[in-house]
Each structure stands twice: as C-alpha cells, then as structure tokens.
Amino acid sequence: MELSEQSKSFKTTQKDLEGVLTPEDNIELKALRCKDESQAKKTGGNTLKRRNLSGDCNGRVENRMPQMVDVLQAQNAILEVEKDLKLLQERLTALTINKDNVAESLKEVENDYNSLLSLKAAMEKECRSMTLKTESLQEVHEKRKKAIQDKRFYMFIVSDVVTSEREDS
Image 1 (tube, rainbow, N blue to C red):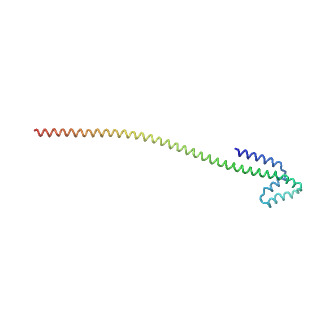
Image 2 (cartoon, rainbow, N blue to C red):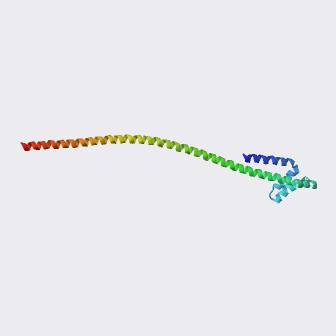
Image 3 (cartoon, one colour):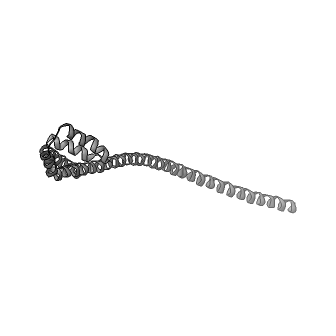
C-alpha cells in the first residue's frame, strides 16, 4: 500500500506543478520530452515560432525550466512507482495462485492419507481375523495329531495284546 500512497503523492505534485505552467510552458515541456533534438526543434521550436513568442516569453520559459524539470522528474518517479506496483501486483497474483494450488494439493494429500488410514484399519482387522483362524486351525491340527498318536498307541496295545494272546494260546 505504501507504493500506492507514494504514487498518489507524486500525481498530486505533478498536477500542482502542471497548474503553475502556462500553455507556452506546456509546449516547451513537450519539446523537452522528445529524445531527439531535431524532433524537439520541430515540435517545440516551430510551435513557438508560429505563435511569435517574444524574448520575454523565452525568458519566462527559462525561469520556469526548473519547474518543468521537476514535473518531468515527478512523472518519471510516478512511472517507476507504478511499474514497481504492477510488478508487485503480478507477483502477488502468482503467489495467490500458488497458494491456492498448494491448498488444493494439501486437501488431496489429506484425502489420500485418510483413505490409507481406512485401508490400514481394514487390513489390520482382516489380519486379526486370519490370525484367529490360523490359531483355530493349529489347535484342530494338534488335536488330530494327538488323536492319531493315541489311536496308534491304542492299536499298538491292541496288537500287542492280540499277539500275546496268540502266543499264550
């Protein structure tokens, strides 16, 4: 906001200085703005000749020359401030767009994170279920194994008894 205030201040100063200038001074000011001397002579010089301005007028213009220079400097300063302001506004716009993009990306990452948390919870639940099933199957396996061993032992005893009975008979 400081640049805007500075720009307004320069514009006010420029208007004040331009208010002091006479129409003849404005013609001379336009001539000063021209970069090429020949172009300045064509526009300012010819206009002054057409108006048949006297030496007094030229003297008055020379006296006002510092004011015209001040006006030009103020205009240049205003242009620089406006240029800086425009660059800062463009940068602010770009940063705002980047901020919005980052905020959108952050929302997407948060959604992905929440989805992954839900998936993790579901997988942990499935893992617990599988662990319980595995434990149950291991218990059944152990019981069957024990039953088979008991059955073999029983068969061994029965076969031993049968063999001993045969031998006794």
